[in-house]
Length: 409
Image (cartoon, rainbow, N blue to C red):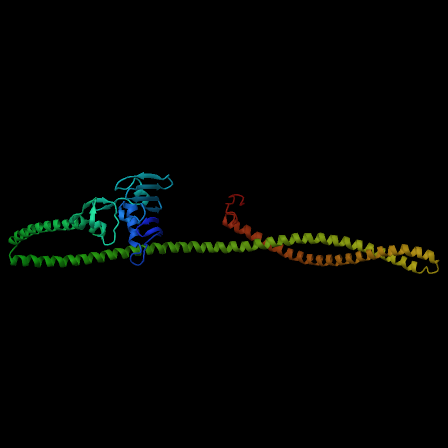
């Protein structure tokens, strides 16, 4: 695709640049504004179609440069100037001089112009000027196109390529059809000569109609038989499905019974697990109760010491007749001891609180022990039921292992 066209000293264009975009490009303007000059400049750089009158008055040559996606081509033409520069892609430009009326090597490739097929011919597209016939109707390779060639090219251009071949094929088929029709006509005449008399033909026709009725009845009977066979096959399938359903129902009933027993055993095992947990909690509570009893003993000792300290304090308070200095000295020591006693009293209060908590825990443990006893009895009953069920089943309900035949284990 041509991206840019630069025109200098060409007819009315002193220095013009025209940029093109993908798709249809329209150049609009009033008459004698240089629209056709753009087409003639394009014909110069793309087809080397030059007229010395195209050079602007007062100039020795004109310059036209076309840039495409593939490269660029620049042409300088005048009465005594014929110079070209061609650049393809990123290759260095190549200069040519005095190449005649043709195109320099690589120019068409740089412009993206190549030969195009037209039926069984190949030609390079031309450029149509104002008031000229279309290039396909003008000439090919410098020779005037004949009417047959023009017709073929027009057919190819408007999408009717191969129409003449199609017409020839139709004519050939028509001739062959007429020939086959003559042959068939002769065969029909021969067959008509060999036709049976009307009475015999009518008798054969009546017999044929009777046979057709019998055949239709036989086909109807065969259809009924096929439908009956289909129904019988479907009944057999339904019977097999019912038998399989009954079998699955029997198995399902047995499984439901076993699942019910296993559910009952799972409940008893869960009760046993809870009993074990309660037993462990009871042991822990008994340990805490023992700790509580030790605390009670220590609390009794602390209370006894507190009582004695109270007596000592009462005795110290009764010594009012002592001297003030001795009283003050004794009081200082007593204050320190009193502080320690207060601290011990707070410890005793905290110990009493812990003792009350321990007693509450002990009461809870006794209740839990009672519950554990009931759970143990239930566990023993569940274990007895489990062993009886295992002995009756012959396998372990938990792992499925078979029991010993002699020991029952």
